[in-house]
Length: 166
Image 1: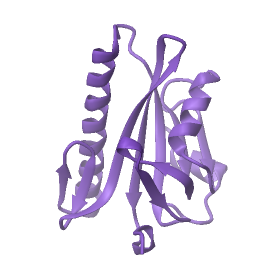
Image 2: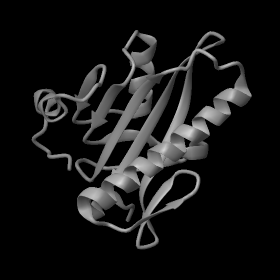
Image 3: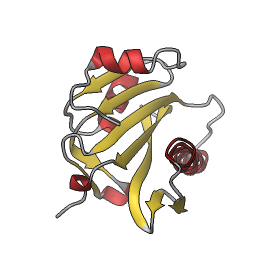
Image 4: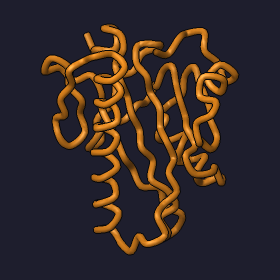
């Protein structure tokens, strides 16, 4: 769970030993996907992770907003270097769908394994607990000119009831 007292050093300590590129923690940021895309464009290594205690401009599919008030959800994005064999937009769309599905499956596995919670996936990108959305996954492509640079996989998991819009 995101603790309001977390900082960069705490996050690095908790994640030590994982094969991650850069790890960046923000108590508040606009969108972890936007930050991850910017860092990928600046040369962030594969598997760079952005974590935020709050997103002021969180994003969902089809331009929707993801509501993430302070310390009410886990919001993170992972920048994955693009595969070398990506040939066009159809390949990229298939990659985005695959990463979205893998992200949803990973969240379900974590919630079931570590917290014994019975989850469901509302395809393509929502994780449900007791028929209520608890998590959204957003995969986006990041381009440099006409070259696919990276896939950004964003995950937002509600951990407190204040994460739900009133």
